[in-house]
Amino acid sequence: MPQKLYFGVDVGGTFTKLALVNAKGRLIAKSKVSSAGFSDKGFFVKTLRAVIYSILRDCKLSYRQVNGIGVGLPGPVDFKSGVVLSLTNIKGWDRFPLRAYLGRYFDAPVYIENDANCMALAEARMGAAAGSRYSLCVTLGTGVGGGVILDGKIYRGPYFLGGEIGHVPISADGPVCQCGGRACLEKYVGNRYLLERAKRIFRKNVSLEEVSDMADSGNRKAVEFWEETGATLGLVIAGFVNIFNPEVVVVGGGVAQAGKVLIDSIKKTVERHAMKQLKHKVKIRKAALGNDAGVLGAALLAEEYKSL
Amino acid sequence: MPQKLYFGVDVGGTFTKLALVNAKGRLIAKSKVSSAGFSDKGFFVKTLRAVIYSILRDCKLSYRQVNGIGVGLPGPVDFKSGVVLSLTNIKGWDRFPLRAYLGRYFDAPVYIENDANCMALAEARMGAAAGSRYSLCVTLGTGVGGGVILDGKIYRGPYFLGGEIGHVPISADGPVCQCGGRACLEKYVGNRYLLERAKRIFRKNVSLEEVSDMADSGNRKAVEFWEETGATLGLVIAGFVNIFNPEVVVVGGGVAQAGKVLIDSIKKTVERHAMKQLKHKVKIRKAALGNDAGVLGAALLAEEYKSL
Image (cartoon, rainbow over all chains, first blue to last red; front, side, top):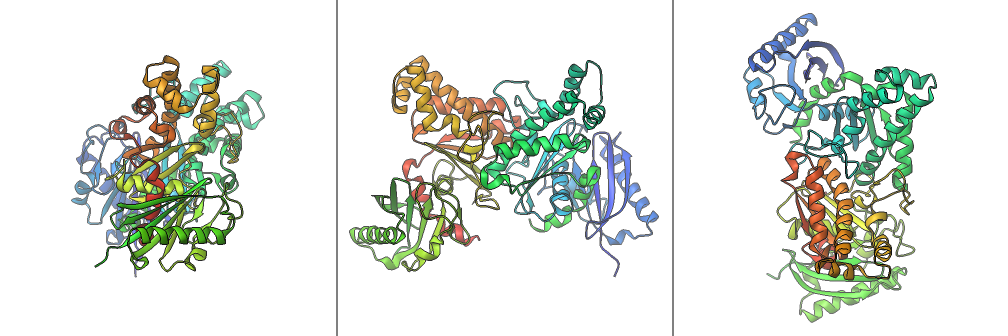
């Protein structure tokens, strides 16, 4: 019997990634295309179809084996009805019934989900949180995303806005955030803020990779830079730990790949602030799936739907 | 057919409350006894039996109508196995299989649960959060307790320590907490701290009721006292709102009954810090069931067990 296959699609503001996986979530092939022009939904579908058929052709596989196509999107998504709620990076998709629309062009069932939730799902099923039933996945980048897995399932909440740990306020005052809140974690550990802070400290433009390299070679200021970042993140994570008691907290995104200092500082802070019954139970781990987490998680959505 | 009845028992460090309710959760009778001597489990059972039979006799009801006895306890409880995990206020109950033990003395099924979870359940089913499926219940007192209802069910987490919003750290530094953490919310809005703060501000011993009365009559310092308390609570609640998107946040306990200033300050702070899609959705409400929430919630446990 030919094996069952699933496509994962991770739609980003700049690039869209595709991956073909088998029923065990193992990656068979992947591809990456520009997201330019995706405001035109017809063009999006055409591109998707072209890449999917090309991947199948290259792998000498048949479309009939495709049992599901999961799409991760950079914004809140009504998972049940398959409607995109809002996307800041791609114009014209708000309130769009994407699942039904794509369903007309693909024979296989289509599933849509928020991208941070896809990452959390992939890390929980086959990444750094594999084997756990309760986990938090924090992704560091321009935005600070979060996905929460409770009792083995993505936590979506009543409005499909669950998991936004980047928007936990960390101070009574602080900068207004585009989310509508103020003093959000993202405003203190998001890439833009980190780059500004690095510029102030090192008195020149430095990339975060450079700050990581400096920390690795023992530069005191660079070490402190990541320690402070970890302390800020760790405090919010500790609060989450005390309320939701995850078995694993996965920290991913470009910055997390950087160095050991950041993760160690998060661990130290969580150990300092978590309840005694929890501090030695919760594992703080770097993401294991790197940039593939989103697209792998999207491919895993088919199974998630079964539990609805 | 005689109606089905349930007993709720709310075991506190000082007093233990009992309530008899019908299948709709309506209170039929209640009673209150001292918890002194409850370290002796045999004495606890004897007292429980005596009060239960006395209530039934007074109401001219039969024990045969009792379909379940729910017990709320001031500490973490393994709801599934019915084992008390730890109790700080009653010695000798740690790791005790209370459910099995009580089961030997009562014909009706016995259920045990953490008391803050019982309160959250009661408020969600028949109190300030009735009609919602996602809610947070914060109880203010010596401790700051929390109970979380997700998708209509108590959130317990993998270690039965879920919902401890009183132990969310609010600052990198701050006093060590008996929970093993540091700078916990409870250390800033728990009664002990509030009384100390009131003493510093008013330069004499004042009760929190007095500070509430002063605030009601417009005393500026007293108003500020509750505004600051609400701002501290509101910031932690806003973080919870952005991750878990509750429909209702219920604030209960002695202090919450105090005055409008506190609740208004919490509302204002949440509105300031919550995401724009959430800030007008989430309702911040005073608890509706007052001191009966715990015992009513305990009586409601029987139905909760069905979903296990």
